[in-house]
Length: 145
Image (cartoon, rainbow, N blue to C red; front, side, top):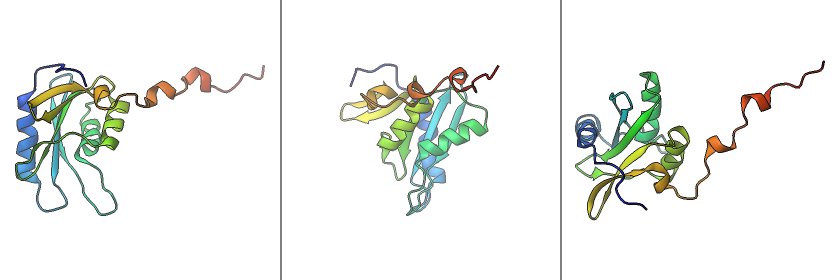
C-alpha cells in the first residue's frame, strides 16, 4: 500500500460514528458508513444484516447517495457500532466502490492510526469493471443500408 494520500477527514469519521452510536441497534445494523461528495455533502447509511447476506453499510451508502443526487463521492469511511472505530471495507465493498468511484479515497485504521488511501490501493491488480464495458457506439446495431 502507498503512503497517506490525503489528510484524514475527521468530520466524516464523526458523522459515521454518530450514526453508528445512534442508529445501530441489535444485530441487524452494526456498521455505519459516511461519504463526502465532491460538492461537500455528507451522506450516511447503515448495513442491513440478514443471515442470507444483506448489504454492508458501504453498499447501502451508494444507493442512499444516488437517492439524494450524489453521484460523485470523494471519500468514504465505515465505523462499527459499540465504539469499534474505523473498519476497512470488505472485499466485495472494495470491488463495488472501485467500480462506482475509481478515484474514491477510503479512510482506514491501522496500528499506526488512521490514514486515507486510494480505493485502488486497497484492491491492487483488480478487475476494473469500467475498463471492460463496450462503448455505446460499439453496441449500436449494424446499419443495413
